[in-house]
Length: 434
Image (tube, rainbow, N blue to C red; front, side, top):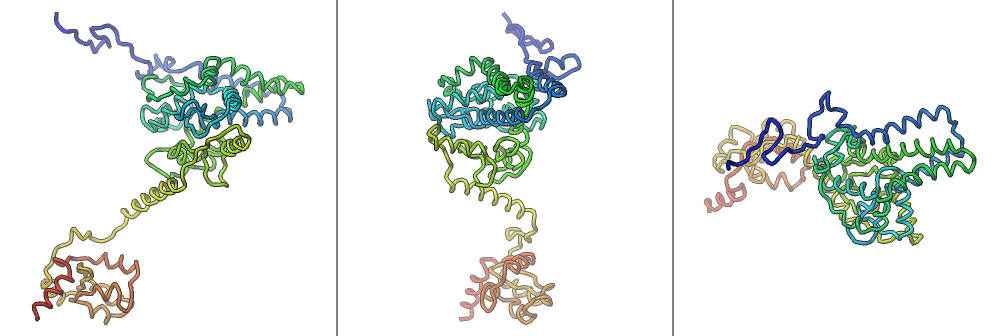
């Protein structure tokens, strides 16, 4: 039988039809609605919009406002401070850290944080951490699930609104997550956790003073919206706004504004460089409430094994990046003709040329100082004394030790190099006269 061939025009092969994921097809007027994840659109845009409309008819009570803000921080920390289940040392967590293993936590704290993370309504710890590990491993590539290179909107929440081919997301190891009973239970019963922690508890809290609708709208729907937007800023704003003091090969950046918006996750350049450090901000004055809470839990005996990168390694990263920036600035400056590109002169040639031009030899390099004789701060006589001679000792020592500015200025006057170096040639000349 003849071999089976592919039919490229129909998208079929001899083995049958090959199904193409919608995300791998162009967006057209006919199929655009198929590219949209409508469930996420309802959850991320539709429900918050409904909450905003309801707010026109539901007055905000002061007690409810305080309760909504408190619950915002409670559920926000559930995302940023999630801990390592300590079943393996590979770590896990919503961020700090069922994703990075930056510290370990006792069972009560893990249960508490799993509940709080569910109240943020951002997916289960297992789902969230799997994507975040892929983000760190494949930052800014096509395998990064929320790469900022696809646009600020896409990295913020476009990656959830538009369908993604799961096979395109980078592979990561989540075996430790699958072995943690807290993570597994929360993943299996996620909708129940969302119903109770996302809406039930907010309503119950406000119901203590009779404001059930206020709890539903403000501590529930709108609080979820603001927590989600704060977390989304880690994927978008933290990769777009700020400085890169440790590494600029990828997009993560540090900025105080992002830190305020994300409960301390704004020092993202540091975080991507040192992901297993339980801190995001390393200076005492930088805003990082998640770091402070983890430290407090340690004092209470709820957290332990807090991981911190050595200051020496952190400083090396900072210095290397500083040196890189210095080298880039240096490369933009004119430092004169490179020595390797200068013509090579015999000593005799140099001496002969110096009879008609003001040439001086310093450390084996010939410089034409004709335009500088009259401007020399030390007077003409000082320069004239070195013309046609080896002026190395005169320039680099003697009566006056020239400044960096003088060395830089002299480098702009290079015209040649002495074969073998001026000191060698002087020794040869002296031996000839013996």
